[in-house]
Image (cartoon, rainbow, N blue to C red; front, side, top):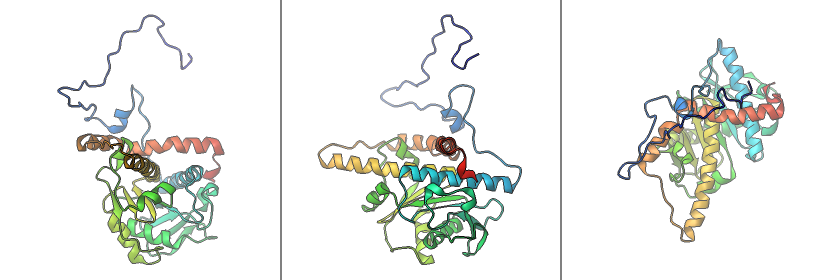
Length: 301
């Protein structure tokens, strides 16, 4: 039977709306007692969550492929700024080491086999040895990985809207549902110290990030962190777009239009659902599948 066919072509019973009706002007939230990914999925089929692997080697290859896909997506989104920008992914076996991209390779060319394994002391211990890592990138990512054992991936790039909003040294306002992924979970590093070439500056950025999911680096760009490279990469995309929305809203507000900010109650509800690690992983799969199809899996090599 075709996917569009129905098993009963006769009259279908009316299905009442599942949207709770607001009472006394107050919104009623639904599905708060079930897994967020299941809450997002209608019917009996749920989007797949984060996979498990039979070995560290299998998980490592999967991580590197998804890391390369994130860079290909960044290239498509226009996040390239010369040789700036980096992603790190903690190794699944050697937890005091992480994989990162080689300096000077365009994001749109990166493959899984291009990545470099460097330990937290700065020594290259595996992967691609034909190129070096980014020195500033190592100092930033090493500091975050040291400070946050729960973080397995970190993303940083010099994107247009992230840089523009960073000039104000202000956190994002909860202007849209998407921005609520960062509700009480992002910060601002408001002490620009130039190109990061000292360990202390990386540590200050890590301290500014704290326990959050993202940090706006004043006069610099954005940084996000997650339990998978997929989570961190989607958070980065969402933070960049949230900065764009904030800038557009500020321009409209400067011309007399009033901004309406989402209430703390609704922002917290959105955060609980949309900032769940498994949901964020699932969000990125749309981009991964697109890159895989468009490039015939070339980034996996």
